[in-house]
Length: 266
Ligand SMILES: *C/C=C(C)/C=C/C=C(C)/C=C/C1=C(C)CCCC1(C)C
Image (cartoon, rainbow, N blue to C red; front, side, top):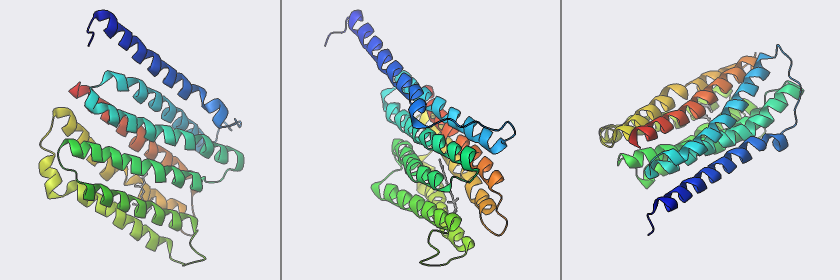
């Protein structure tokens, strides 16, 4: 293979061009994805939707561009981090519209977003756990299953969409959802995984520890928020601000930790 400096330069240039084009495409997309509605200057919930939208877009561009500056073995993780914020950005452009136009809680878009981004994050955990030698197909399947149970139960509880079939109290749906999350916590804190987490490179260990922190502490915001949106006196303003902050922590900050871990190893 030709190893002349010219060739290396060519490849670098090509990489930069692809990265630049991707970033541009991502930046140009919002103009077609959502119409703009004026936001009231005291609409704090709306403002939090706008901030989250911008942050998701910026994170996506950042992860895609930085993907070229990390070791090969981290590239897939960077891609998945970008997909998570990219899918979230797409849904946020709609969620903020629903909020600005109708002042209603964009519950359906939110859960559709979670239904895609949470399994993507599980795939991300799987990649990290595979890197410390603590992953198996059974674990991947169980984590996926548990996350879907968690989200579907939450959706039925918050939306009442199942009420015509079976009328369960929001509390019961919450408990079913908690069981799903509980299983995920068990899987990432249990003995085998813990032992394995002491192996692997510095970067992999950092990624694993941060992932566990995010799933345990960052994810805990959602089941707490759930109570703001259910019951006799729902408070949709607080609910949406809380969910928006939670998404920034769990998608953007989590992606940043993956990036940081990748940099440690590169
Ligand atoms: C990017 C979006 C993320 C990481 C969403 C995570 C959502 C959860 C961890 C939701 C958890 C819930 C329970 C544990 C109980 C039932 C209610 C839910 C769905 C809010």
